[in-house]
Image (tube, rainbow, N blue to C red; front, top):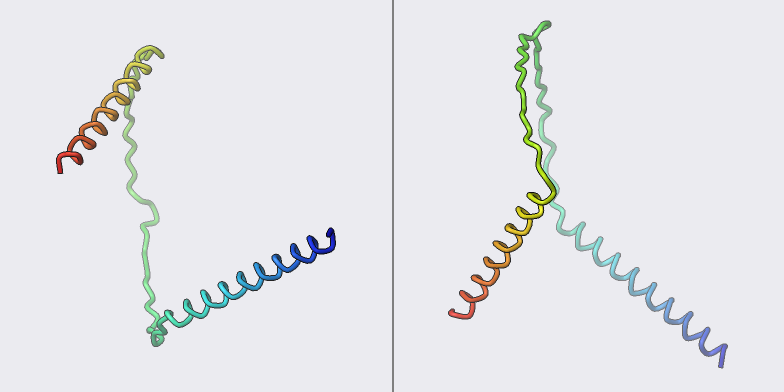
Length: 98
């Protein structure tokens, strides 16, 4: 009984391997058949010249952040969740009317 199980397992692996190999070969054959060959295009050379000393300006911007509490963040998140749920409910109702 144990040998039958081992033989069955081995045959299953062989079959799965053969199916995988067949799939890979079919996929690569299809991909190579779908590939379009184009004639060689001429090489285009582009030259970029940079100034030795570029004109740079620095602009300093101050950002003022207000302190935020976790309660306020929680409230904003809950508002966004509620709005999202309301939007989903509205879409669901619209789909029912169609």
